Picture 1: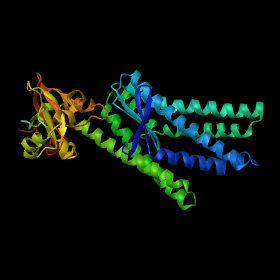
Picture 2 (picture 1 turned 60 degrees about the vertical axis):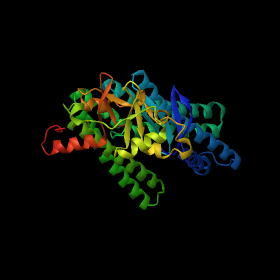
Picture 3 (picture 1 turned 180 degrees about the vertical axis):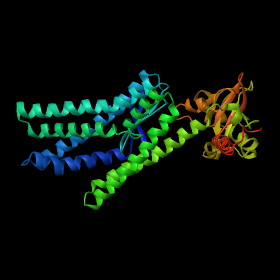
Picture 4 (picture 1 turned 120 degrees about the vertical axis):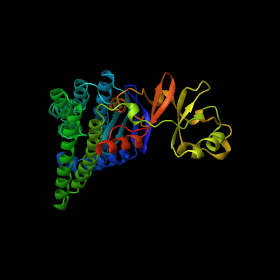
Length: 377
């Protein structure tokens, strides 16, 4: 996610934090220290409220991290690749590959909300017990607030609307029941679009009635609507690609370049002579070794272009998307690892025979919409 920075690792997965997280901590701490705690435990000093509210806000962020960690850990146990976990203003996001079974999809989706519900119940119980046994009103109030926040988070995330966890649960159940993954994806994303619009409308009405928190609900509703729309487009794409082979969409012949050239020579001899924005590289034996992007070459300072080999600034083959000509295109796109997008290198017997770009896929879909067959190329 743009604007995020790495801060460590969790369950073996890179952990990132968006710039909005400190702002979120401040907002939570302000609401807890200036509104909630003075009402629940009146008569304390400002210093006590400030310290308790900061601790409470940090604990809430920690519980959000545990929510996403549950997703990542469950995905890894299910043999699903996980790119990273990112904390941001709307909670968290775990980037991962697509589950290959309905059971795995269900397990990954439900793990986060269950974690939040367990944390919520434990925190509320601990807060009530702490107050009853020791009479520590402020720490108890912080724990109860933390518990209710997690209970709300768990229940809210179970709403049947993608990209919320509840939408993923719905998708997994429909997939299991019908055996049709694409149909389940379309239904869950459609539910997400409807739910997003309803939440945005509810938030706007709440804001007009004087509640500033309504704007937060509007933002969440719009986010859900946009992401659900994108997921619906992807589901439609998967349906349209049923039975289509990689060879039906690939471009061939392919403009390539030698990976041992200097960046300057590669730009002058290859990059400026083609209209492609991503160019496959070949090694001394003529085998594909990676992909270099023209925009990346343009950012290299002139003074370094003679010293750098183009392979040093390219995406190596092991991080590229690769498929065989006879593979199903939908399956090849579905298998893309998080952070690995198009182009798709088409390799046969260690030789590059074609490439599939986003434009190739779009062109194929347009031909199918017109009733045409595979590209005659």
